[in-house]
Image: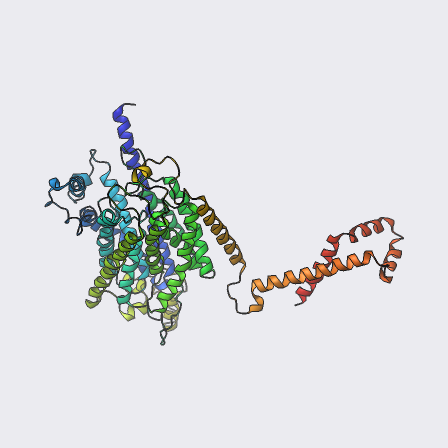
Length: 463
Length: 136
């Protein structure tokens, strides 16, 4: 084999690896679709699933237009430099010299983004990051079901998926990010960068959105609104698990010419350890939530995800037995947080605040304790509790809760956040889409129509 | 406390062996493995526990302890009786049973061998206990 062919083979391995890892990440979206659809009531199932599906559209296009640029342009801002763009001078420093080519490759009009045999890598990294972004917005989607306006959700999905978490990624999941270079923040599996941001963004939105009609009685006591298809929800979660393996594999950095796999922070790691630790975190998470929730199927299955997120911060460093203990603790606490959230008057239909917000927070703090002292590159602080706490606090509040609250508050003032009371009672399937998810079954809508007009089918036919 | 086996980045980057947390502290790894085993045992126990635990008398621990105490008591009672019998003249019931078995030599030998084992005594106790539990 010629040296040119060997070099190309290295490039092709990298391109193929990220391509297929990203393809498998689509399982997360299939999972969210099933998870939310199952968690809704029959009268809202189609609207719920369609809303989730539209996340791929809203975030996909906006991530191309500006999300990818934000990730590459914001690592230095506002601590170690400004926002990078056509106005930046690459000769300013070594960091700028290294960072600006990445910024130039991220413009929508960049030659690197189109078919270009000179660049096999930029596009495939965009693909992986776009899937990360869609995952982030999907976390919000489930919590708002059965009362949010589709238009309002689309706006919020763009703010979260293509701006908020992307800034968090630029600061804490980027080799030039100031949170990493100045404070040693370490978050291999994006526990804080994605999950804490999205969980707290969701909290901000839910405060303005309010609970579903009937969720609380006149004394403010929560009432259960049961999923119409729990088996579908459970299958959805298993698909999310599958996608998470791919997501975490895509967090491994291996580029043409590399002699080892590294994290985004340049520290050594192995893909095999991700396989072992993800599996054990999933297992221990299921156990923790199963015990804690006293066999509640919804919480138990969410526990697997809670376990993985709880170890996400430094799962490439933890010993498997440490993973089991951390995942168990995170997932054990998760149902308690969900119940606390519910009792405080916040109607989180899928437990996103507990699973992603709390476990993201927990998972981002844990490296400061369980992986404390691991060195980063020369001149960059080692993993430390202060850096982890500072980082996740900024993510959860500054890039999660505040943007979520402000965006939803503005939408609420414009009457674009929530559907009307009549539409919510009728169901969003009929109200927004004009069709039912289960037209041939004796659904609640069908039976109420039968009571009003005996002899008329839900489709409007006589018989 | 540092969980890292490395003090410098160069050392970390050039590592040829384990890079995981507590790689230089097997005691801690052992501790976490013990915790793992405890979590597993807790899980197995929890799978047997009923979801609603309204009555303390039906708690699996209470029920388990009750069964164990009852079984132990019955076993001890039978073993005591068995030991006592060895040193005492046979009762009228045993005499009549033996006189009956005298006419069936094969059955007599089998019956004698079986009845003389502690296992048989334990089995009788268990049967008795199960009958009483079943009645409850």
